[in-house]
Image 1 (cartoon, rainbow over the protein chains, first blue to last red):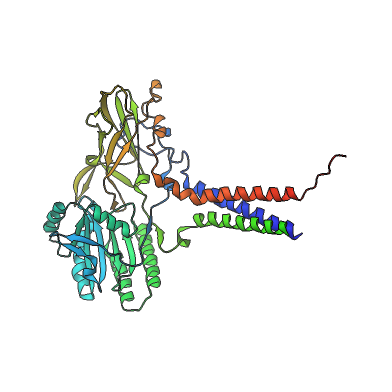
Image 2 (cartoon, rainbow over the protein chains, first blue to last red):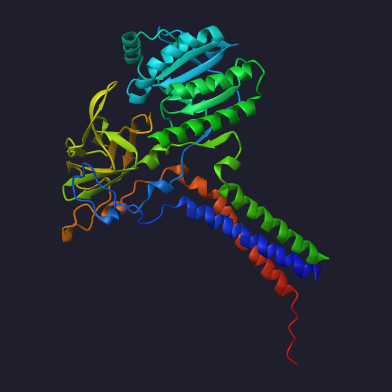
Length: 235
Length: 215
């Protein structure tokens, strides 16, 4: 009797395994034909239904593996001087990865300039990491009169981006650390004032030991979700 | 006794397989805090490039996910294989996008097909390889660095019926990136493991049967 019961459990387990596996598989496969009605823009030849047998909405999104602590790295500054990130040890950092060819990166620079001067008295330092050619970065930084420090690199800066878990490079992204070097959050995409203020508040709460790291991270996730809901509700 | 151990083994294997599948299937908020699914697509999912040979033309097509776009001036098609000459690619008109911080640009959304005439001086000794370059962004406020891919355009195609650049496109996928199979590893383990557990269960049940030998 016991043997029969165990066999039944094993079979049920096996069925569950197969079900889970096939479910994952079916989730990851784009649904056929679902997007056949897309309106083409700029198509050289008229598209047919067979052009669109993949529904992009079913595709897996990129996964970012955020490190717990600020990784150690050294990049050159605007003048070409190698600068380790430990230059700012003991400070909360807002590490903004950007490039001159990236429109949303350019758009958020005025905000970062403002945050830099507003947050400096609170021990928070804004540092740019430009993944770009040095001449273009310096020209643009001079044009916009960016006063906060900027580190510059090409392949080496991409390697640094990968250290933050952004393996499929995408810009801009901004890393916020507490003054102990713990990564509080990594924000992908263009930063806006409301989001920046929300994250800053959580980081300061961690710095002042009013919030634990996990609690601060939850606050940020929930806060960003609420902001997004507000934005989609009003827009 | 042996039977019991075997049954236990099957049960453990089955549960392990179930967990393997479940670990992959669980939603993002149940995954570890060190890995969070973001709101953006990996570049190869946001922009899918395929190409094929159509007579003396190369046709390169980009399928672009909703909410994403490619910059016209960052797109190019070049020869990669020896003795291949590719003329400047011809693109259709895109849409005009004006950004106060980047100026006015031509962009493509949804899909775009470029054509480029080509000639070869090696009489087909080498397979045709081309290098495509493109760069794009998401409307949500993020951009990908320029992407360069070397791809083999597929030959032949269903052009005889006048269905220019239609059904052949789907078959013209470039070689899949090496890591594209990785997300399915847990699923495959679960399926194979589940099947193995069934097989072992079958063996066990069969073992208990005593067939009467013919007299």
